[in-house]
Structures are given as structure tokens and as C-alpha cells.
Length: 208
Ligand code: AMP
Image (cartoon, rainbow, N blue to C red):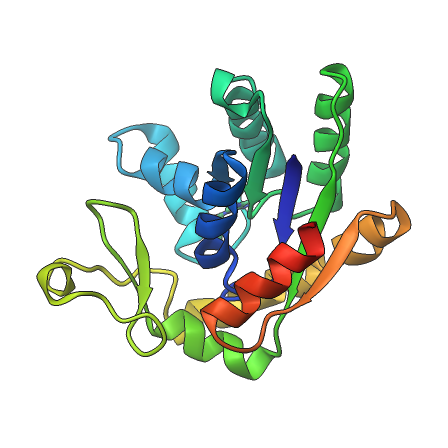
């Protein structure tokens, strides 16, 4: 199963991706996670990436495309994959189509998490990640257990100010992917409001 998760920042893509990958036995490929892992290295590339992410801007297509091409070539992607946060521009979507065509593969579904703006800010600002496991919690909707609460971090780009910029990038560059995938007959629109369990049920129904 070859899947793409599409939606604005804070839509719950990462949270829901966890249960989908468990259920279907495919890896979650989050370009945001790959970029953050690269930023933890001491390299010129890490500084360059930080200049984009800290200001809420998208990283240039050619850098992200290269990361995804490399990741999709790994053995664990053979049974399929769930791309989380990629593609984010029409140019990235076209590159992905070309990459998959070369490997005689194609996308099965594009899951679009539809969430009103008012909810996104609350989800983003309450988000905290565990640097050890990579697990993401929400202070109100998915509270962390006491033994990990002390080590959680708040991402630099999960502040209200940077969120506004990320949302504008989403509207300008990523939202056009909704009609792009609708025309390709791949878009599955999921109501992203409600509890984590309710949304998971909707996703499972859309995929079965
Ligand atoms: P995320 O964890 O998906 O919210 O991504 C965090 C940040 O990484 C984004 O705000 C962008 O700066 C960058 N990023 C992640 N995925 C992409 C992508 N597909 N294209 C461009 N930039 C990306």
C-alpha cells in the first residue's frame, strides 16, 4: 500500500500515521523527521535547513526530493510506504510521480486531513515531542506519561508566530495538491475533527 498523508500543519498526520503503519506494516516516511535528524548533525546543510524551518518556510524542492528518493530506495519500503508531509508542492508531487513510475509503482490513496484553522493552532502550540523515542504528545489531547513528561521538547517552529508562516506556506504551495490529487482520482477526504480514536476509525474505513 503506497500512501500519502496530506494536510495543514497540526492536522494530526504524524499522530494518525503511527496507527496506520502498525496496521499495514509499512514505514512512515516523514520529511519533517528526516530534516530534523539532519539538523541535529553538525554540517553546513544543517544550518541551511534550519534557516528555512525556523522561519516556517518550506525547504527547497530539490533538497527534499533527494531525501525522499534515497529513503524510498531502502528495502523496508518494498511492501509500501506512508509519506507524511511530502509532497508539499506540485513540483514535489510531479517528482514523486516520476520516481514511482521508474520503479513501476504508483500511489494507492492520498489521505487528506481536513481540519479548520481554529483547531490547528491549539493542536500545534500544545504539541510536545519526546527526543528519545520521537513520539509526539499533546498536553491536552494526548498527555504524556509522568516518566517522560520532564524530557519533552517544544519544537522551535511550533510557536504561534512561526505557525502563522507555516500556514501561509501551506495555503500558497501545498493546498493546490488537493485538486491535483482529486483530478488523479486518489484523494480521500477525512474529517480531521474529533478524538484521536474517532479519526483513526475514519481513516481505516477510508482505506478498507
Ligand atoms: P513537519 O514536521 O512536517 O511539520 O515539517 C517541519 C518543517 O520541515 C516544515 O515547516 C518545512 O520547513 C520542512 N519540511 C518538511 N517537509 C517538507 C517538504 N516536503 N517540503 C519542504 N519543506 C518541508
